Length: 93
Image (cartoon, rainbow, N blue to C red; front, side, top):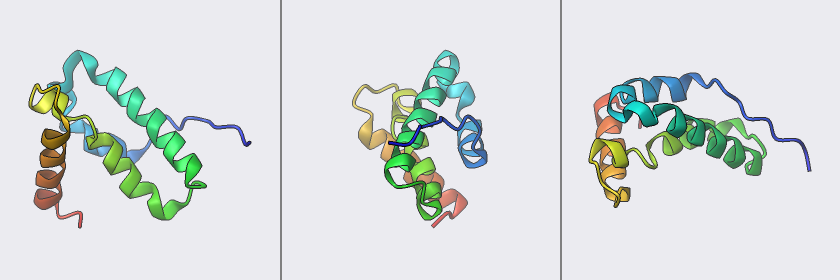
């Protein structure tokens, strides 16, 4: 198995996170690090195929965001709602 190195800078991830840093507050670095680790492993299992990078990055930024945006432990639906609203607003497709 090849060595897995966590990429610590991803412009799309930083752009997506930038509008939520204040909302996430003290948990920001922990959640950010969690997202970077999960992206790293997902991309590894996808053989680092560039065609999946944007969707993987986006999905992992939003996957738990409802914990903070809606203060909900049942965060799946709120996370989806935030992702869909941002997608509509920014027309990512």
